[in-house]
Image 1 (cartoon, rainbow, N blue to C red):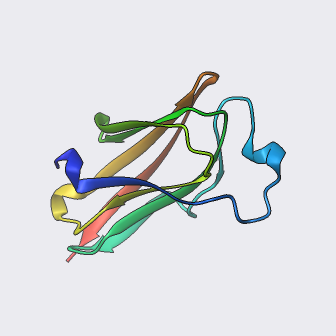
Image 2: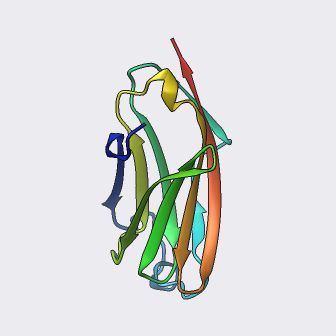
Image 3: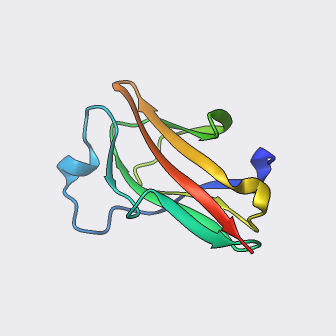
Length: 119
């Protein structure tokens, strides 16, 4: 998979009533909200989206790994809290274990999901 097949987006601000103190958390990054479970099943040629709410001091660097190989990394100074990793038009080659490593000056947190692709 080429890194250009993967999109990273900050798609809205903290809208679920989080306080300024939560938004401006000064410690190690925290995943405040994510999808239930630890895997997703999608059909071939559908899009896969992995949305999480992140709190932590900016700038934040987000690295994406597939099967323990880094495939994308970007740094952000945004104040937005909702982050999305998206793969368009999933193929069987996209199946595997994905990890997001979210880092700032205070440390790193890792979260993972397994993607299963069905016909």
